Length: 299
Image 1 (cartoon, one colour):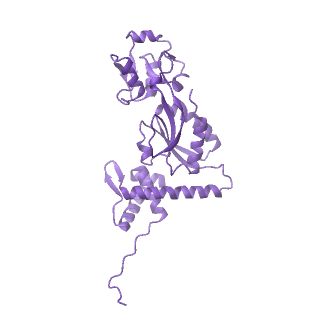
Image 2 (cartoon, rainbow, N blue to C red):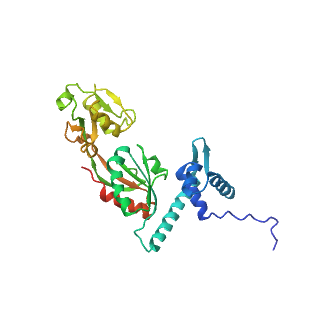
Image 3 (cartoon, rainbow, N blue to C red):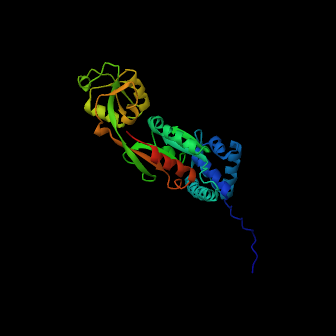
């Protein structure tokens, strides 16, 4: 037998902590954000990433001024890390003497309208049942954060939820045309006569069903106030600055608003509760998801 002239390098052995670091950076997109999730300073995250990349012999992220973008291998490792995270949490749940003591942080993304009108009131009751739970709430108008694994649960108004997510439709979101209760516009006929000013989210949500409905039925009407959220539409309408199309679940309880129409069939969408297939078995995520599924009520 001829002895090898050069000792072969031992392949780098990824550990659970390595996967945890990669997943944190994939979710956060920045060293500071990953460090906050891991409970370490950003320099520690950076040094750990350098060690992993040197060991693997390839980069896992591209760096830019906006943060760290995961390459294909990092995405693959993040997927394995989520499976490991799920398995560990399942094991911890099984070992808990008091299984009702669910703990940890659950990240929820939704719109400001749904957050204020539905999600926040539901979470208030859940906090009393599970005081060790913490919540990170993000109000935005897209599902990108859930796709990037930045979020555990999304609550969205949509007709077609993304196929890579799992979830259920909570119910229909109905819309109607509203005006200020003490304002000059008290009849739909006044709107048809072209006497109304409009408040709408044209710039922020150009494809929103309320915008499309107004342009279809009142093509000559121009929004006097264009805002970046449906919640702001409601507040300006209540102040008497114009009329606007609003979700019934949000507007019906506002004392300063009056409905000028019945629910508009063309504007109806579904309220969906969505999560990752990998995350739905985590006890903290499953607990919050089940609670929201039971308590989110649409009028």
